[in-house]
Length: 295
Ligand SMILES: NC(=O)c1ccc[n+]([C@@H]2O[C@H](COP(=O)([O-])OP(=O)(O)OC[C@H]3O[C@@H](n4cnc5c(N)ncnc54)[C@H](OP(=O)(O)O)[C@@H]3O)[C@@H](O)[C@H]2O)c1
Image 1 (tube, protein in one colour):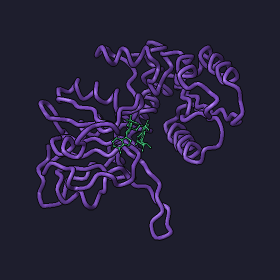
Image 2 (cartoon, helix red, strand yellow):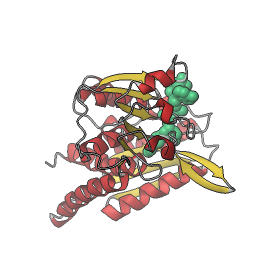
Image 3 (cartoon, rainbow, N blue to C red):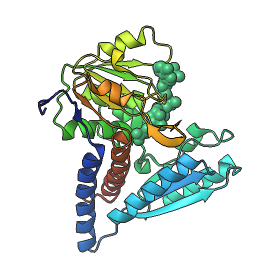
């Protein structure tokens, strides 16, 4: 890992990492095109009009278009029935031009999220939430890996941060982030602890971490008292707050405060978020290659 040259931490720039992933993905797609082959296809389903979800879906579409991925967004009304969503997924499962299917979460409460995830063809499950893919991840087998946890790994890899033997504490135990990330960190030989809202002495536990990852959803909860000097801090949280009448995005980590003690840190925005989108594009290409057996 690069040495810290002054008291400022190394800023783990997610936009740089994302650019690299997107560049590699784009050049593979260019090659497919030049060979006259079909390009990868991504279908995104958005149910309702949750403002954050609308922005995420738009950003995914922009990224896909830039890369030459054929993307389609299926907008469904908030009051759509569960079976209508499943019917659409069944059609997309059979659609030969679609390699990746992503259902933007959260879904309205009358729709059972598990049923929706389970109805997606695991080979097209580019968010990697299907039990089949999560099971393979658990077993350490090659599979599509969830975008945000894989994004964290890409950041560590990009900055050549070797976490072998490190004590890694993840705060947050969701199926989307915390649990799959724990498997990926284990695979990189860290000693992993997962904490959550019922963890005793959370601050003390966090302070024991060489690598602290927060995926909580509580703005600026983590301050420098939680940080072991020279720890690496990855902030997955994205929270919208109003400060002095201005709306802005912040992480779970109080960035300015924590920066004075840690060795490296991801900003919000510009940290894990952009890499998550890049991983979705990379997963779509991966799913394409697996389906068409293009090596
Ligand atoms: N950067 C990205 O691309 C990206 C992608 C996905 C999510 N996110 C962000 O990451 C955050 C987490 O997302 P998620 O989907 O994993 O959320 P989630 O399903 O709501 O899970 C939050 C986790 O945080 C724990 N938690 C909540 N309050 C806590 C507290 N005060 N102390 C300790 N643990 C606490 C919860 O514990 P319990 O299990 O005990 O309730 C839960 O395990 C959100 O801000 C989300 O917007 C970012």
